[in-house]
Length: 226
Ligand SMILES: Cc1cc2nc3c(=O)[nH]c(=O)nc-3n(C[C@H](O)[C@H](O)[C@H](O)COP(=O)(O)OP(=O)(O)OC[C@H]3O[C@@H](n4cnc5c(N)ncnc54)[C@H](O)[C@@H]3O)c2cc1C
Image (cartoon, rainbow, N blue to C red; front, side):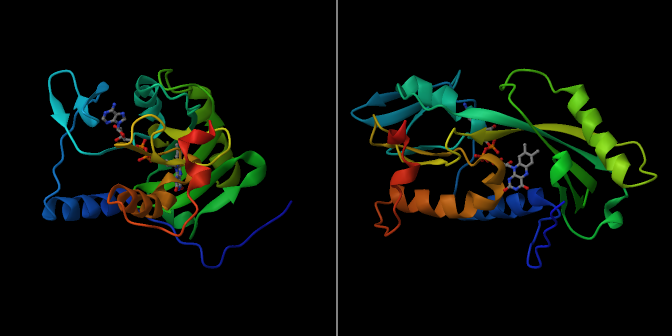
């Protein structure tokens, strides 16, 4: 068995707290937040209008960054982007975060454990099951069994979570303008690394919509590759 030790690896013990700090900053900078389910996008003189069930808003430019759900919108824009979801699961063992000092991945069993503020997080599995199917109990059981195989005396687990990694066949994200509409931009498809890559993708896409020049070659991320 191969073993790797990443000396300089870092992890966030509570990603939600970081998210809320960023959200506060966004509001302080006069950002506006509305929680709406966008169902369609129409155009008026090339300006996109986002439509929810009861409301609609016209913008100069729009970024679609809806993770694995982005395909529901890109399909409506006549793009055939083969986005799918690699479903993954996690559970917590509360009060057990002290048992390991850093994230540990067990490659041969396909799962990892990370000490988090909520407890010891046990995470893993890749499941092709779409966005609508219910969570698989057997995959949760698999995580429990793997954790108990490695650590004695774990209590009852808590917080069963199913998440949707947004993944494309070539394992690259889609970042850049839509093929068909110049005022629509995409930023999705960051598969297993969306949290890690969010900052750099955000920087790239915000520069793009502000028409700032870049010396990065962004061609590999274009939706034109499909
Ligand atoms: C088990 C598991 C472990 C992971 N571990 C890591 C890790 O350790 N490190 C890492 O970097 N990444 C990790 N990831 C991957 C990471 O979670 C994803 O890559 C990331 O969440 C993608 O971010 P996103 O913002 O593109 O999409 P999402 O996080 O899915 O967010 C999409 C947002 O769009 C909203 N939305 C969707 N449709 C609409 C609509 N029609 N109208 C309005 N809003 C809409 C949703 O409500 C949601 O808020 C993990 C994923 C899983 C499942």
